[in-house]
Length: 508
Image (cartoon, rainbow, N blue to C red; front, side, top):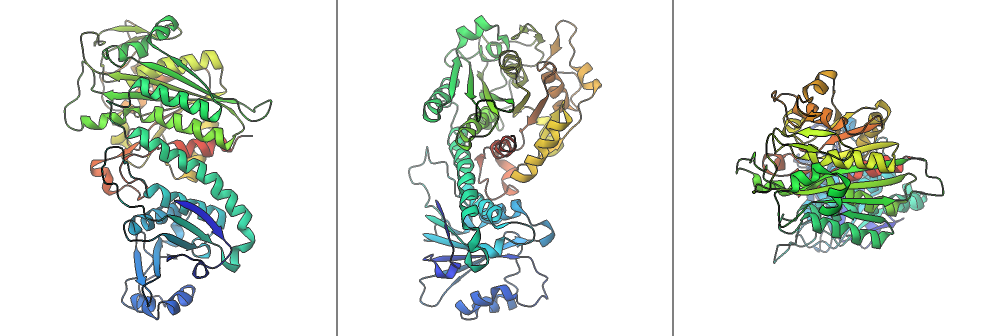
């Protein structure tokens, strides 16, 4: 889908579908004056639909009217309640519009900027959010399909009209920036949705190397022999059961903007390409979804793709900890003790608590070798976080209040919600082991997301660190599909990429 900007009103463009947003109104409210011109174009059909109660601006509401002659259509879409309206509501509206137009023969849609740049939402932010939602909602994973569905639109036009014509340059700049981020999210979905027989640790390494060549990033891939020489016993233990697809640790470096970047930020992602649970095998139900256990690493990969194009100020180092966790005669076992990079030891009590084990190497390695000012990790780490927060919020656990506050601000601005959770001295005590430094599971199931975070914190030293548990938000399936925003149409969605791009863009 192309995104373009015109200074004209939507009706003056060549669009075959005119898109007009509307805030929710009471059932007894008079017909809005803002729709008068559109009603005239419809020959009074819009006002008639209002009288019948079909049009009220509710979230997800779509009304399509075909004009006389049948060559153009008017689509009025709901923006929801005024007091809740902002960039995220606008993004959601764009998603609903995109879904409504799929397969309906529309080629060019023109959205009237004045209809969505309402309340305190500036026109560049409104059009960027709307386009983002429309583009993300148009996504379809086509790798294994012989007959993909038609696209909703070929071109989305931001029609500024007289009200906002002077903002054309700032709107184009906002759309160009958003395009870079949205494209990286879509690119990540094509990788995140791949089955485990294709998206192996070696495959993810190949994607990183290709990315490095395309965008001038330094990429280093550590194979199983190098990992052994480095003392990365965590990744080796988890990946030891897979004799066909050995583990990889992948480092991607973006140099930052200018000669002296303001700081170095490390991003570390869990990349379990398939998680059977290992010897502590999972039940069969929903195990097919464990191809999504690589979501954290894929989000890091795509974020590195985006920041290289956005040219953010800080130096950014992305680390992907990739392994396939399957049972075999060479798999690690409950009761094993593994030694990680830097020497710290882990008592393994549950081989299905493998994400924290691979991350232990990635966290300690990047901290020792790159000395970042802060570390952020992303991982589909615990079912406990899903129990606590559901499918719409990722858990945020941090050792630094400033870092946590800035991530929460980026979360609010990007539409990828985080909720900060406490990690106390009790949780740190619970992960201590009697035979090793830490243990990867505890005998107390409650607060599993917090004990997992306490475990990870043992591998970052004094460096400010934040952990994002994206187990409930990384992909959409099952019961969650019914309540997911329309721009997350199913499967891997790339959660964390927009958030991190917003956070990193705000530095310097």
